[in-house]
Length: 372
Image (tube, rainbow, N blue to C red; front, side, top):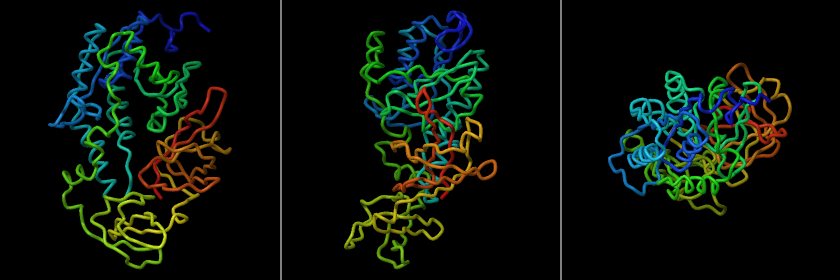
């Protein structure tokens, strides 16, 4: 190995290497900025203002709030690094919020964090970083990246409870070779310990838990704000097509849901299908929600297509387990996934993400959006 290669896998001394750190104001990205500064890199912190809240409070569990921007500024001042704020509210509204609302109205269960990474965070921030002539864009995501021969591959984080690789399946090969993720090889407790040692004001800050523009997880209120006409009553049917109840709007339901159906039966009922065209909810018993076949659209591959010829592993939700599967690519953009064992609650709008196993861990191969 070239002795000049630095900790980011770049053939330069840290003091000659400029990095942009995406600083959300949380403990993870702040710690990354601190690590980069301590190792001697030239650090530029960039914070994105993504949405207008109006009710920003100090103990918010949302990311990217006004409080977060202030925290990021304080960290940058403490570390004595350059700090910029980019105002991306319009881009975020068009690329993420509008998509989120439309997806729910189609009966899907969207994942705005993937859209955010795919658009403003990696696409736009990537371009800004290049304009600043930075050698790498560094983030606080919990994914492991390994750079060999100028090619970077992404793996699930060592801390599997924190792993965020599922949300990054749409990263392009060009972006991945430019991105670095220093926290993928450590546990969260260690991150907080580093933040304390660096005397950062965010060392004990709670993790963000809600989608940034969805206060208290109440996504229905967001949809009501943008599309108040979407709360239409409709039929709840069983799988035989019989009307057995009435719902207050399909946006209140997700595939696999059991609570809140408000229809009694001799066995517990689950949402099996959401038919947005007819404004219907289809319900059935537990054995009806297990699926083995998944159709994907808009797939993104970070590997050769031949790597998918063997059995691989997939995740069909961010908190799900790795499931053994076979993937058949269908043209350039679509794929059919056959699970070895049926899985409950697979929903259109979610992602199906591909992994293989090698001596570095669980390697991200790409993925696609669940169409049906």
